[in-house]
Length: 241
Ligand code: SAH
Image (cartoon, rainbow, N blue to C red; front, side, top):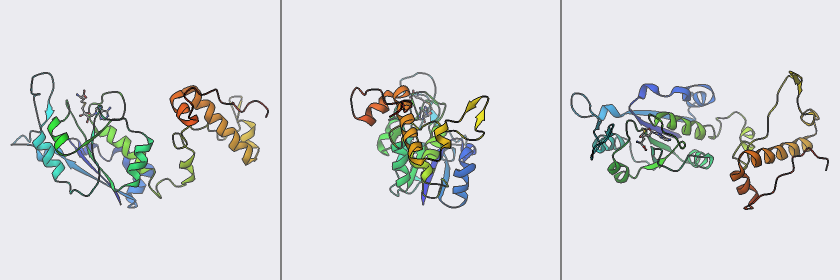
């Protein structure tokens, strides 16, 4: 079973949103497992100290390597990748979510303060992964976001696996716009083609909207999709054939 172990200074923040909705239900059904390891429990002395001032001076506190290693070493080595949530890592994306979901799970070290002593990152072979180009106060929210992306891809978690296949990034494109009832809302009608019942036309419309949207908003994704360095504007699908 896919198992996530989060090493954290705020175990009370877990499972957070991962305890709700489809992700929480899947956990209750035993489709994945989550455990937290309280880093404070490995702290030193009466005050369970986990951090100290940066060598060389400067602001803030750095998590000690001996304390971090003791917490990491308390988790059995079972082949799961060991991740350090860090703005310095490669950015998490749907491909990584898919890789994680295909494996046995992950061990996630959630940093705090100014981060982790470099030596433990090296000595324990931690893989740094970032949620994006911004700085959070800790790794927990990043770890939860990444787990949510991976767990919803596990078999049986998202009710209808077909609902995963056309999604943004899965095809290399952003998803087409979605509509539901009512058919007219504030004078805005649902596109006629979606009410036509003609599945071939609907698929063509969706793909053309997907391409147009990706071209506009994410030229980088569109270029990779079309495999041309300078892609030409896609057909919008509005013109007659
Ligand atoms: N001084 C560090 C930032 C520390 S932020 C630097 O400039 O690189 C404190 C902790 O929050 C980090 O140890 C990391 O675990 C987490 N964190 C912050 N931003 C993150 C991001 N974009 N992705 C993943 N984790 C992040």
